[in-house]
Amino acid sequence: MPVTNVTHDIDTRTIVITAEFAAPRDRVWEVYANPRQLEKIWGPPTFPATFIEHNFVPGGKVTYYMTSPEGEKFGGWWEMVSIDKPNGFTFKDGFADAANDLQPVESMPVSFNDYRFTDNDGTTTALFTSVYETAEALQQVLDMGVIEGASSAINQIDELLAS
Image (cartoon, rainbow, N blue to C red; front, side, top):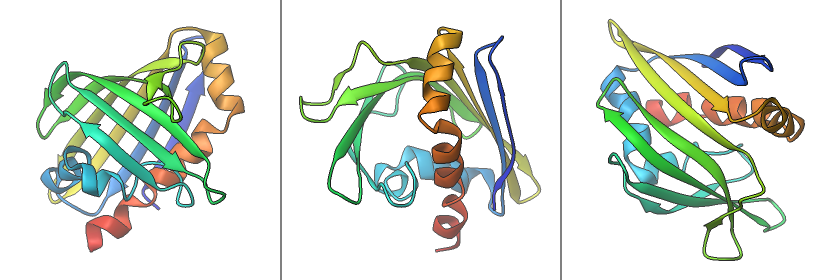
């Protein structure tokens, strides 16, 4: 399993996930830069993602939805902040209304995310950091199972990298 460590801290409003991948940094980068690859790993295994928009540049917009086994759709959006190929990227991440053109849901938490990739002679260490606006927002997503969902999504990456 790629995920090697997960921490969260209510005081600093953060979740940090560390993962190790048996692939070069450029290959791990491509998973996020290519929406067709990202669809294979974004979200838990039983909630496949469909990316509608994937403007992977600073200021770009990314929209997607995940589909539950029962067919219910759950939307999300990213606002890209910075791109540092292949070292990482930053973005705002929020919930979107899958039934309403993937418009942001203002009443749901938004996080600022920093994804960093470090090359280790052919393998990659990834550090996924999410910072929430308030402790209450962090607690809300923790209660929704964000750690389990994110960890199960990240743990799908090895299979994709091997294919």
